[in-house]
Every structure is written in structure tokens, then in C-alpha cells.
Image (cartoon, rainbow, N blue to C red; front, side):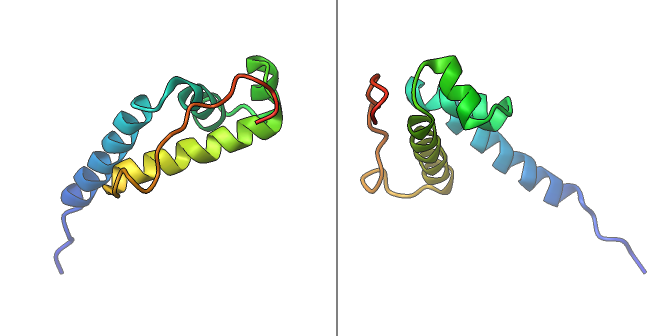
Length: 93
């Protein structure tokens, strides 16, 4: 019985992860800062809101936009279907 070679699968997973990371750095700043604080550093939306001086609702909205933006870029979807819009600096987003 021969074992299958896991190297191609690992390489594919690394390629996908590398694409994900590269796309995250392409995010507009207002989306990237929320994404990095919440999804990378592990801050809650409430903590992130306090750090950035915005509402928790704005954090949740921006985080959703960031995740969708990255997903779209990684999966090669049409850029016309979803574009990152600059978020307001006010707390009522």
C-alpha cells in the first residue's frame, strides 16, 4: 500500500493562503485597518471601535465589506459586482 504524496496539496493550500494575504494588503485603508484588528489581531468589534473612534456597527459593516472584497479578489469574481466604497469617518455609517 503506497501513501499519497501530501506535498501538492500543501503547496496548493499555501498558494491560496498567499493569495489571500496579498489581497488583504490591497484593501482600502478604512477596510484594512478593521480587518487587521479584528481578523488578524483578534480584537472584538467593540474593542476595534474604541481603538478607531468609530461605532461598533461601523466596524461590523467595514469588516463585512473587507471580507467580501478579499473573497471576490481571491476567487477572481468580476470587479464590477462589488467595489470597496470609502467609509465615512463619522460614527453613523
